[in-house]
Each structure stands twice: as structure tokens, then as C-alpha cells.
Amino acid sequence: MDSSVIQRKKVAVIGGGLVGSLQACFLAKRNFQIDVYEAREDSRVATFTRGRSINLALSHRGRQALKAVGLEDQIVSQGIPMRARMIHSLSGKKSAIPYGTNSQYILSVSRENLNKDLLTAAEKYPNVKMHFNHRLLKCNPEEGMITVLGSDKVPKDVTCDLIVGCDGAYSTVRSHLMKKPRFDYSQQYIPHGYMELTIPPKNGDYAMEPNYLHIWPRNTFMMIALPNMDKSFTCTLFMPFEEFEKLLTSNDVVDFFQKYFPDAIPLIGEKLLVQDFFLLPAQPMISVKCSSFHLKSHCVLLGDAAHAIVPFFGQGMNAGFEDCLVFDELMDKFSNDLSLCLPVFSRLRIPDDHAISDLSMYNYIEVTFSRIRYHEAVQRWHWQKKVINKGLFFLGSLIAISSTYLLIHYMSPRPFLRLRRPWNWIAHFWNTTCFPAKAMDSLEQISNLISR
Image (cartoon, rainbow, N blue to C red; front, top):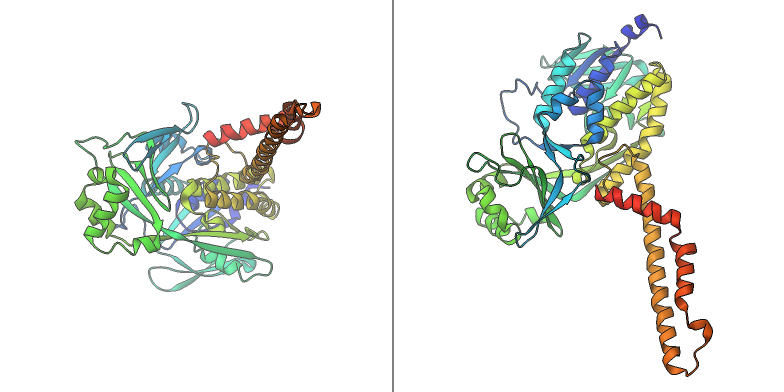
């Protein structure tokens, strides 16, 4: 496609969050004219605080996307490697579970700082313009028209060739696509909410081992802690809303932590614990699925706008970043032809993004250190369940055969010769029916994948 035509292409990116600002960088490299519309004010010059800064886990997938726009080294230098999970038992005992090899780790990064860096990187392109305090009112992709409302409170119509919806789990762009025929949509709130707490530095250093994702598993609820560059930890308490609603007073909160997280109280401090607990209410968590991710060549959804997921897998941001990377790879493949790129993007990403949503729900296996497609991981999961079921059948058969053999052996003076060596049958059954050599190889691969 002629570069002069590309330069005339106008793209409206709705949402200046993590995915929107990263996608602006990708598209700006292709000489499109990019306008980013963000409903909130510029976080880099915000005059008020929105509460604590949430930390995120940046995995290999996310780093690959940042690398493609030349930002990996900058972001990694501001992150803290977490090479293992540190499990805190109720008794206070701690056990480390590595993610993989010594070279494999995930990074704890500040969402706020990462967003600021991405916004700054996008603004460095002369063909990118940011519009903060601009809320999307209307979206008409077929006519290439959006209507935004700026700080002057005057609706403004904007024409564009492509609308990119990166406006989060409650996407306004998606709400307009939902009115179109054959657009599937579902959402699910889970019973749990989450609340952010803080472990401050101790004597100018980390109060716990810094290079770990700390986890306090407690049956129906849990707490995690990620290290910050300022030597503090950002904690997240996940718990059913009905449990949050029982904690009404300072004494309720302290008693609750003394019962379930006793080792965390001296780390946080009772005063700060109570202060943080009642600073903001517990927040809901939603899972969103939709199909398709695009409308002809005029509109596409990325990130949470297309597939909001619950956070127990730590892949929400990384999946959104991978959306941007895959979209860019397809733009290369189809020479910037949106009519070809967008349908293939939906076809490729829908099974993967729906799969990571399911994996996040089941919190089953981890795919952090590779670009194994998410839906392939789910297929492996279903395969493993079949293997486990066969294994249970085999175990039951083994017990039944052994019991029968022993019964006949001790009741009959001359046991049947056919029953003298049941182990030969079992070995044959093992090798041909349940776990042939190829299956054992696959099991080992899955075991290695889970260990990461």
C-alpha cells in the first residue's frame, strides 16, 4: 500500500490506558494518524490521587509486545523480578515454589508508572495526539464517525477510518457493537471482591523477601503481595463479598487478620491495616467474553474491551498486550490492509482470549513463559483430565484385580495359573490403554508447563 495512502488513514483509539497507549505506539509506527481519546485526565499531571497504585505481573508475553515498540528495557529496569511464589501457611511457615528455571521470572511493575511511560512513548510520535477528558458519546463505525464530549461540554463529531476500542471491561465501543446483528456477548461477576493493602518498608528495606510473589492461601479467600521499587509491598485481599460485609469495625478487621493472616499483622501494622481496609470498599471482578472482536474493516476491540478476565492468572494485561502484538504482526502480513487484517485477528484471538478467561476462572495451569496459544493450553488441560480419569479407572481396576487374586490365592489350594501373574496384564494395560509412551511424554511436558 502506498505510504501516502497510509498517512491519510485516521485512527481513533478509544481509551488511553495500558492497551490503548501501547496500541497507539504500534499504529504510529505505521504512519497512521492517531487520535487517542481518554475519558479521564492525564495521570501524569493529575492533581488528585485515585488511591493506591496497583501492581501488575508482567510476563514474557507482555515483554515481547513492549520489545516490539522499543520499550522493554525501560520497563524492565523499573520492575522487580519475582522468581518464585512464596506460600505463607496459617502457622507462619513459608515455602518457595519456583516458576521455572533460574532465568525465568515475572516482573512486578507499577500500573500507574507503566501507563505514564506508555503515554509518554506514544506522544513522542508526531502523528499521535492525546485528548484527555474526552468521553465517547456515540460510535458509528459503518460511517466512520464518533462523537466525543470534551471538557468544554460541547459534543464533537470526528471522522476516522478505524475505531480501536481499548476502553476497558465496561467498554462504550463494545456497547455499540452489541447492537449489531450476530454479535455475541456474555459477562459474569464472581462472588469475590478485592481490596488493596500495603506492607510498608521496614528499617528502610523490604519487610519480606522481595523477589517473590507472596501468597497466603486460605480456602475461600487469599491474599497476595507484590514488591514495589520503594521497598514496600502492594497486597491484594481476595474474598467473597459476604465476608467483607461482616467486617464492620476496626476490631473486626484486626480479629479477622489475627485468625487468618497472623504473620501479616506485624508486617502491615494494625493502624495502617485498619486505615487501608476502610479507605475504599472492596471492588468487584468481572469476566467478559464477546465475539466477534471486529466490525468489517471499521472497528476492532482489544484488551479488556474484548475479553476482561478475573485476575487469578495474572494474564489480563499480558493478554491485552499480546492483542497489540498479534494485530501488528497481521498488519505486516497483510500490508496494512484492514479489510484482511481485522477478520483474521478475530479468528486468531477469540479462541485464545476466551481460553485465558477460562484458565483464569479455573486457575489451573500457568502459561507465563511461552507464547503457547491459550486455547492450546485449555486443550492440554482437557486432555490431562481424560488421562487422570483413565488413571483412576486403572487404579480401581488394579485394586479389584489384586483383591480377586489374593482371595482366590488364599481360598484355593491350586489357584488358576491365569491368575498367578496379574501384573503382566496390568503392564500390558498400562502400555497400550492408559499411558503409552507418547502419552507419557506429553504428561511430562504438561508437568513442566505446570511447574512454571
